Length: 293
Image (cartoon, rainbow, N blue to C red; front, side, top):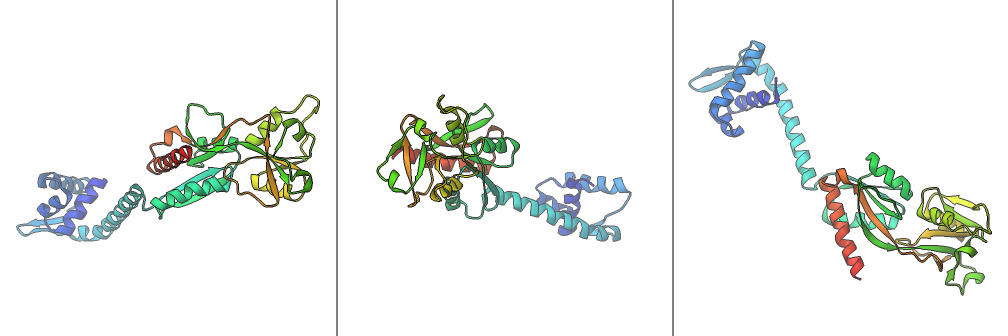
């Protein structure tokens, strides 16, 4: 029993006539008659008694009708679900980000337009986020300092830079900047392998320092901030989107003032997905406002 035959049988059973069912399905009556007849011939049964008043269900047809009705309702549920997805009344989006602030900014913008969508947010470093895009475990990523290949669609979203994070203590109170060489003389609190801040520190190790030996490795920017607040050392993080703390201060790294951006990225093969495309469009409009300010 094909889906077309099931729809034809159900429509005739509901309408009571082949002509009425044909109008409902927007097909010609001869076409509908052939579909039902082929179904009857396939299984060697009579589903309708045809007379001048229309079409009445036989005993076999009456037994089949509840099953066809369930199939019809399931098909309608599927159609309704997909229509809601298309109109953004339902759907799920997974955003990956290095930190919460920028992710929540994008989520808030999306929520303004489509309040019924379920948004999930996961946190990881730049390398992990790009890998997650490729595996399909996230839909959109917010990343800094990524090396992109041709399979990733991306654009600059928020201006960013790397900063040192020092505790709010007298020795740092009048400081506004620090050199990368001086950074390496302190107990360093760094992100895990794959983060842009970690990559920077490894690239700028002075020859006189020797092997790179951080005092602590923390898996998030927030963790780095808390460690600095506790007096465990000096941290390096990406500044964009991070809420300032009264217990720490940010220092410009004077010999590494390279401008970075927080980018929005998705897999090129998925950029035509309606929800992903909508997020990219919303973020791009927000980025244009950011860059004009």
